[in-house]
Length: 233
Image 1 (cartoon, rainbow, N blue to C red):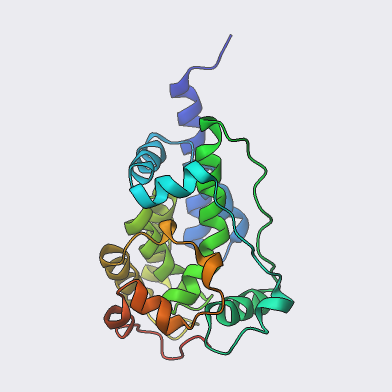
Image 2 (cartoon, rainbow, N blue to C red):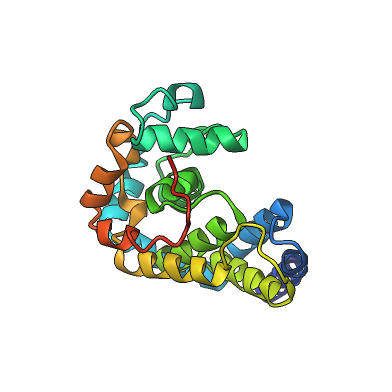
């Protein structure tokens, strides 16, 4: 007998609550964060968020095409001109010991559209770090979660924000040197006023300076409010 949807959702929420508890204790718990994100994708709130994303013309065009340009490896990215998107993105990955995600293996039918979006968002995560000037730190991730929560309306991003703020309530010092409340405020503001990052074809401009990308996105003035004391390369 099939399991009722309500029971499935209840089970997902139970696991999410456990992940939230772990993240409130330790916001750097990557395993719990990924599990929370994966489980939140299956909630009604996430379904509504995906429907909203699909309604954006720029995003819809990428989804229909299943667009996936060339993502060079890290050793190639860091050879791009200093200050370019490829250079900054490459060094972000290098510092974390990461490589760009492999292209998704998807069919062209409509059932793969949501999987494409999920993969595209994950692949673009560190690109968004580079464009927004948010380092890969606790505060930097909090800022990007704020950005994602506003741009994507992703429930997982909102839950990660909540866990970070709860952790802050009993953490006496911030190892990143920046209060995550300030970081989140920056991310939310940028996410609210910037055009949809998910509609961008980053692969067509690895060699372009970050300043050029920011001018194209009309976020140059917003970037000036970046609260992080040390900007990315």
